[in-house]
Image 1 (tube, rainbow, N blue to C red):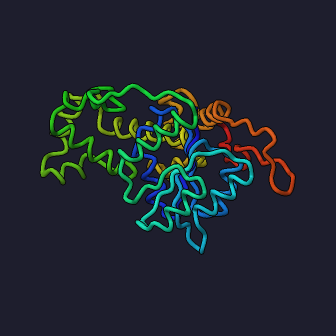
Image 2: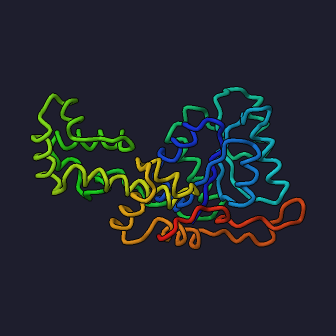
Image 3: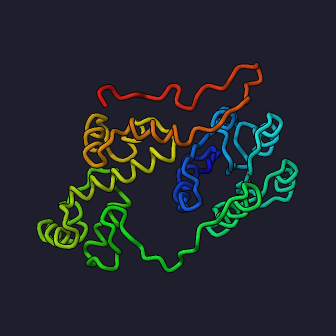
Length: 286
C-alpha cells in the first residue's frame, strides 16, 4: 500500500484533493496533509510518503521546490507533483530542477492528476495499475444499490445527505426544500431503501468516518466533528454498533498495517523520529 502527503496552505484544497480520485483503487490507503513548510517537513520525515502533492507557494516566503530539495537532501525518496495557481515558466523550471515529476495547475484537472499518479506507480514505484472500470455502475456506499434503481425522490434525498451530512438534517427540513410532506417522502425513502432516513444518515456518517480513519491521521475527536458528531461518546457508540469495532481499535489496525519501515531515518540532531501514533488521542472505555 502507498502513502500520500498533500501540502497546501489552503485548507479547502487539502481537503478536496482527498475526494478528487478514488485513491484506494491505486492502493493509496493512507493520506496525510500539511499546511505549512515546517509541518510538511515533520510529516514527511515521520510519515515517509511515496507520493507528495505540494503547492509551489507555501506562504511566508516558503516555496515547495525548496522543501522538495530539503527532503531529498535528507535521503527521502519521494515522487512529487507540484500544484500551483502560477502558470509561470520560472516556477515550473525551479520545480523540475528540484526533481518534481509534474506541474499541475489549479484548479486541478482530475484526468491530469490520474495520469500523474499512474505514471508514478508504474515508473517510480514499479507497481501495477487497477483495471479500468469506466462502465461500472454508480453504487450507493450504504445501500450497495445502483442509484438508477432508486426513485427520483430518494436520489434527491441522498444527494442532500452527501452534500450536508455534517449538519443536523431532518426529513422536515428536506420536505420544506421539496415543498412536500416529510411523512410522504419518508415513506418513499423507506420503501426504496428499507431504512428510515435517520438510519441512513447515521450509516452514511459512519462510512465517511471510517474512510477518514483509514486514510488520514486525524484524531478521532476531529473525525467525529467532521462527520457531524459534536459529542465524542455518541460517535463511539454509533461507530461500534455499526462496524463491531471501536474507532480507536480500527485506527490501531490501520496504523499497524500502514506503519512505514523507518529504518535509519533520523532527525538532523541524530535522534530517531517519533512514531506516527505518538500524541494520538485514546478514548477511554473504547
